[in-house]
Amino acid sequence: MSDTRQCVSWALERKCPFRSGDDWFLPGPTSTQLFDLKCVDSALRDNRVIGPICVTSWLTTSDSENNSHRIPHDGFNINERLACFGGYAHMAETCQTCEANVQVDGESTVAGCSGDVEIWPDSEELDQALWDVINQRGLESQLRTLFPVTTPLWYGFWINSPLQRPQAEFLHELLSAVWDVDEAEDKDLRTFLKALETAIRWELPVHVSLPPLGHADMGYFTVFPHCPRCKANAPVGRWKQSYPTEPHVCEVCGEIFIPNEHHHVSELDESDWSDNSLEKQLGPEGYTQFVRDFLFQQGSPSAQVDDIVDNANDGPLLRQIMAMRLKRNATLLRLRESSDPRPSEPLTITLAPGVAMEFVTIPAGEFLMGSPNAEENSTESPQHPVRIARSFLIGRFPVTQAQWAALMNATRSKHPGNPQHPVDRVSWFDCQEFCEALCQRFGRIFRLPSEAEWEYACRAGTTTKYAFGDVLSTDQANFTSSATMFRTPPDDDDADEVVSILMDMPEEDDSPADSRATPCAVGSYPPNAWGIYDMHGNVNEWCEDVWHPNYSDAPADGSAWLKGENEDPFRVTRGGWASGTEFVCTSTSRSQLRADAGPPDPDDDLEEDDDFLKLIFEDFEVPTGFRIVCELF
Image 1 (spheres, helix red, strand yellow):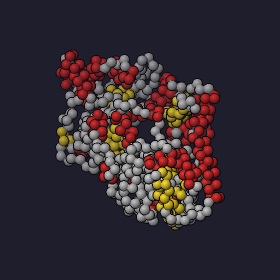
Image 2 (cartoon, helix red, strand yellow; image 1 turned 45 degrees about the horizontal axis):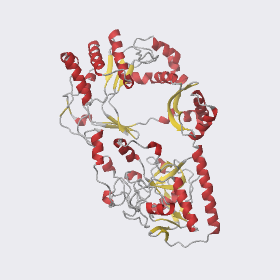
Image 3 (spheres, one colour; image 1 turned 60 degrees about the vertical axis):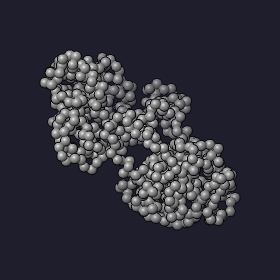
């Protein structure tokens, strides 16, 4: 989730057989029509072409010695994409003889007639550097003749397109003097300077564009209110339904416009990005062989290839799951064969002096599981009847830090200190070990709830979105209201100021009103009708089930859905969490996590001074805990 950078896009106007349409000369259409050609050219130089397949993106995996390796993820068939243009070889040959094919550092490349320049346009340092050169060389009069003068200057260079020869010459002199173009990270700028040289030499117009600031997140692209002339951000806030209707003077270029006529637009990206997936194109077996071929071509020896492919297919994790299942099944089978039916009264077990676990009786019964709205909640559908034939006991609260420490002699929390806070950094394996320890100590059947049991207990006889009705209040659960999460942020986008604001927020305490965004002590909010606490928000909770993308063929008897357990490393989590909105806290909301997810990866520790990144990662980290079921039969 991030704001897009305002990259300058450029294209040289030079007719060629691979660019077509009424707007063929503009940067956008040029980049789109030549994208596949550029991809193949780059892949050939990077050894990412296997047969007719061009690999365009990859994932990183590791071998058993934790060495990182790339494995292909997305790609396309070169013959299918480029056949209509005569194939790659013909296109490359045509490009090599074109005067608009800009080349940098002596690299043999194609489709060099377009590109981007990534610069922060609001940089005070950049603006001062530009003015210093202009003043030192006496270029101000020429600047005002050739370009609209804006504050900052960067915006004015791209208002009028295309750039003609005098403008290209001015920009070439100015930008060459400002930047040390020998720096590796300035390759896009070096390419643009070469493009300006080419335009000057061959009298080619240079088409340029600077898009307004946007925001990409969760399949949507949003354009913020902006000046229609220079594309500078309008200081009228964000994420509003409407904006001022009176004339507004742009602080950058002086243009007068009405913000509400240029308000932000949110568009759903309906592209099916999975179409580029090589696994989807080649099938599971074909994809596995392609991965092996790719690794061989990258120089990996045979034994290492086997190791990498096994890790990429989650072999070690799936074997760990199988071993855990065998262990747990043996314990549960032994206890079921030796145990007599237990009374259904509420249960309390003592783990240590002053540390107990309370269980609530859940009666047998039937309910409709899932959401009735399949279009909005495909993973929560189809809604289907489930019959819970036998009553069972479930934890009144999520497992707390005190309970974990008493049984496991360890800690599993990102927020240690309060023993009544729930554990919030546990994996599915951790939960299984905790249940196993309970079984061994008390001789009773303890386990994770099935997904059906969890929802049945959460609903407590209700059919509404939440156990408290169709609306969830922040007085009823520990979650972050969407109205708060999507409030208008400060107009100043400076990262240091954002960090300062967030870092200066008061520390949490145990009162419900001040515990937003982080887990709080269990029982801080009202229970549902069956006396169970924290089923909405606070910490996401593990269930026993293997993740399935919907409820087609789901068990109707309330048992855990374990089909595919030996092939899928993902398990179901339920209930939402403190930093999540009400939308992930419904009685039906479900999500997936790898069975080994939960504890932090020590290899991902950030440096102490990465405060901004830490805040970003903490905001997206999902605190994950669990609660226990005790069988009565």
